[in-house]
Length: 303
Image (cartoon, rainbow, N blue to C red; front, side, top):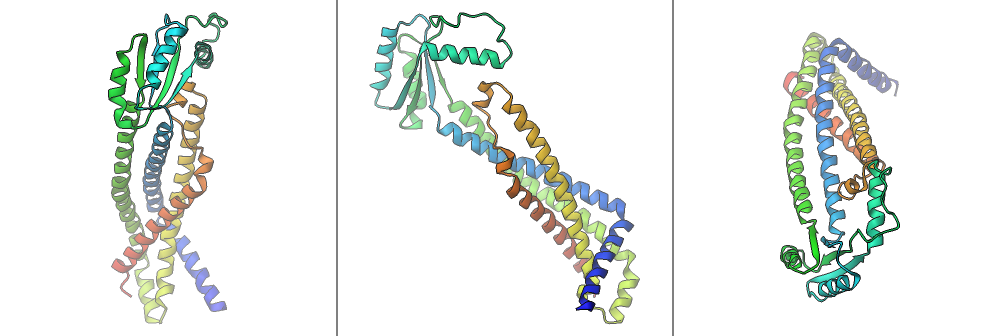
């Protein structure tokens, strides 16, 4: 038992000595791994949040139909009847002038224009609108074109373009994540491999002597494995902290932005992602460090 404990102490002590001896390469390896994990983590979070935005958009009405401000309530009733009679309609929610007036006053207050005087009791200058969902999203463009022909309708806004944009963005981010995983992962392994190679060369005579006196493979290779794990842990923890700081700042900024922006872009709170993301960062750093260690041992330690 004591011999095993001394062996563990030796491995840990020797790994620290190795890292201190080549501290400049240690810093370079940690920095490259930090940058790699930061980029991959940022892209991963972007992909998750874009999918979250798409899921939220999918649950919202496909379009908003707005009437002219001059349209009377009777005319608005006829427009609503026309919409409801369309067989492509799944749901139609009418938004009154008073409700649209409240939305307008709230929006002006959010963007810092609450000091502007406007008749808060008079809703006659606002308009009636309808939030519409269709049974089949493939009918959006045709239905939009038909609604533009209805008398009294001023504007038809569809969120299809928003969904198409975020779908393309999600696909691009995913591709970038996979590419960075390969390229930056290999770059990190190669630099860490070079760091461990230097410590192997510095201890070449010592390793040869240890081999002659019958030291076990684990005793000779252990410090290099620990060295790779330490580099991986340092890089992963630092990159996680950096990603958390950047993400929290962005989330806070969007949380205090106008409602119109929040309606389109909403981020998942970091608390809902933090623990799982931290585990992925640690796993990525340790796997990268172990891979570099095992490659260095196989290539440079002939014991």
